[in-house]
Structures are given as structure tokens and as C-alpha cells.
Image (cartoon, rainbow, N blue to C red; front, side):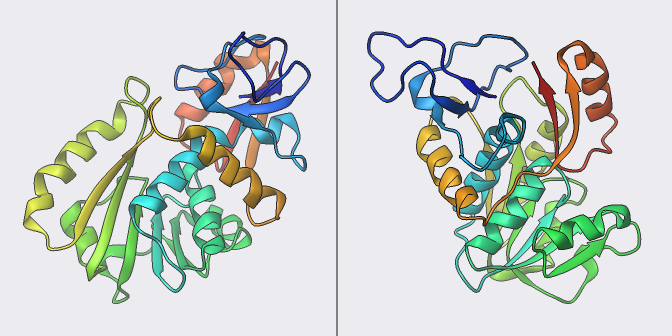
Length: 253
């Protein structure tokens, strides 16, 4: 979510009423008012609208955590499976900001979008199986969950890392089976395997501050696919569940 501080608790020192902020909420934010822990809140990037800023926290923090877990470095070769989605569009931009060479996997209709946000190469999964290509990568970010770990291992370097991106507990059920299957197979592949799942723990505020700096430096921009009004929330959820949105869908209260 993103908005303006209305009031603060007695122990809050970093914010005051009137501050423009954004926050990561693991329990949702479809409301006119929300109560947010100080540790999950940060100053809104000055160059973003509230609608743009609301698209950042969950997806961008997830992408940032995944890249950190993958040990991304300048010069690394990174593949993002699911590059046109909410997490994927941030993962592509962040990997580029960190100096990596990025391959994005998406459908052909989203190829131009993924190129426009910095991907050096785009693979259309409707025409080509990225796990059958000869190129090997230092890091594979598996957001879409469309291929098995054994298949993805074929395009990982011997010391590469495979990171599976999952949703926060209780929110997204679909990735759970893929995550369990990946962890079950992980002892039988030589490369490192990790799972990214955003929870209430960790240094959320620090991650939001890192993202603010990157956004204000022009290195990362949220991709907002469509906006809905508060009264259109059921339609917005239905649209997202269809799985065709590129970037993020935002509710304006």
C-alpha cells in the first residue's frame, strides 16, 4: 500500500502525520485506513504517484530478496522465468541495476515490455523451451513455476543457483506444490537451491529504503498494468486471477 500518515503511536520516531509513505502488508490493504508497523514502512519515492508506489512493496521486495538469495553480482548471467509479471518486472530491472546480463522468459505478447525494462534477451515460452537452450546461467529465478528443477538445472552453471519464488504464507496456494516438489528434488542436483517467501520478519524497512534509492535514481520503475477503483475490487481480483496481467494491478481508494 501507499498513502499518507494520519496518526502515529507513542513509540514511533521515524514518521509523523502528513508523511507520504509506502508499506509492505502481508495481510492486504483494501481499506481507507490501515495500521502498519513502523518496521514495514518507508518514505514513498518522490518521483512516484501513490498508485505507482502501491505497486512496489510486495513484488519488488520479493524480487530483491530472491536476487540477494541468489547472490547476484555484476557480470552474472541471470534468467527470470515469469519476467512480465509483478515480481518478474522488478526482478529484471533490479538484476540489470546490479550489473547482470538478463534473459527474460515470457509470452510473445509481453516480449516488447520485457525488453523495454532492460532484458538483454527475451525467450517466448510459447515457441521455445528455455530449459533446452545451450546457454547456461549463474542464477535462475523461477517465478512462473512452469518447469521442474531437473529441467532448469540443465541451463544452470555447475556453481549456479536456482531460486524458487513463493508467496507469503496463507496468500498464494498455487506455488506450494511446485515449491515442495523443488525442495524434494534439490538433493539430487549439484547446484544450489533456495526458496524466497516474504513474511513479516526480516529487514522490510531496509529493503524498502534500498528500493526507494533505486527508484529515485531512475534504475527501477514499477509497471502498472491496470488500475481499479475501490468499488471495482471484485473485478480487479478476478482479472488478476485470470493470469494475464503484466506488471501490477492497483486499487485506488
